Amino acid sequence: MKIWKFGIVGAGLIADFHAKAIQNLENASLIGIFGSNPDKARRLAEKYNCKTFENLEDLLCSDDIEIVVIATPSGAHLEPTIAAAMHGKHVICEKPLEISLERIDKMIEAHHLAGTKLGGIFNYRYHDTVKYLKSAIDSGRFGTITFASVHVPWWRTDDYYKDSWHGTLKLDGGGALMNQAIHMIDILQHLMGPVDSLQAYTATLGHSIEAEDTGVAVLRFKNNALGVIYGSTASFPGQFRRIEITGTKGTVIQVENSFKVWQFADQNEADNEIFNRFNQIEGGGGVSDPGAIPFEPHAKNIAAFIETVETGKTFEINGPEARKAVEIVLAIYTSAREQRPYIF
Image 1 (cartoon, rainbow, N blue to C red):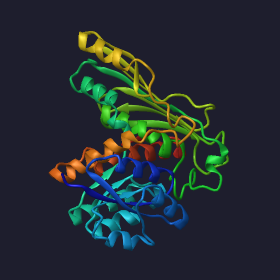
Image 2 (cartoon, rainbow, N blue to C red):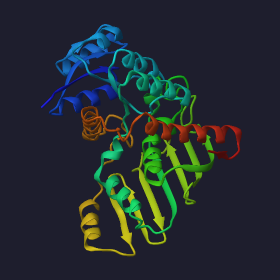
Image 3 (cartoon, rainbow, N blue to C red):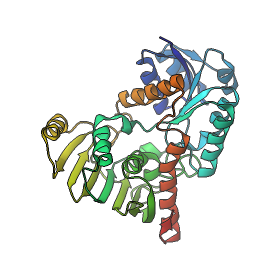
Image 4 (cartoon, rainbow, N blue to C red):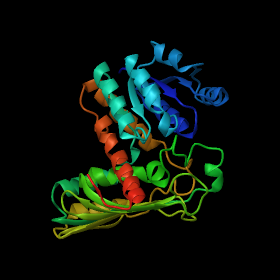
């Protein structure tokens, strides 16, 4: 079995999750870490018994590293991603891929020209509940889908934003939608397909930050279903994330990684087994503490990326796919700013 060798760029909280995920994969090994804060990078490297690189170039020039994880602030993904492509390294990049479509397109183009793979992190996709829900939609079990919504009523303290890149337009690219709710926005478009148009409002109501801490959008999908996106970091004490999809032949309500409702007109024994397996609330990490999420979904996300590097197949969250959620978030910002519908 080939062991794929990883380097991490970034040494903050999310880099810790990536390090733990990599070291829990049988076919992956963490070689080293580079971070703009040398002390943080050294402490993280000591924690995972790997090397500290003094600069990005040293990491990228290392023959021991084949795949680079980008775990820097969101608005600083472009430069190391392109540099990695120029050094022939595959890249898996934390969400969002970047904070503008122009920057994302440059990342995609760099890896296309280099012949290397660029993948994104949307780890919620790797929960079994999402796979069952996607299968039910693809097989037509909802009949005509009439409505789909995601709700992310989370809480972040003022300390989360204090002296941080979080909530800044330069490095976070937005607030509750671009950073927190983007996971569920990705799930929504993954399940429902493209958005045709939306009307949105954003506001900064509970924190003193540049970006929004509350946002809502009403959507029309290209399949004619209607929908809603709601995301917040100003909802004390934080509530479970939720997705609801309903149609003429079925309804599913998923809360965290569990099903509150799983009901279809053609209900069968397999449906009862699915509901019984997933009807207890599981999850909740991230509701009020960004450090409370499990690392296992990250490991599954990375493992799926490794498999496509090995086989040459297209990664399901490749650059163009990871771009879609950012496009929706930016459309929400445009609609809210210009106070008009956004047509895709």
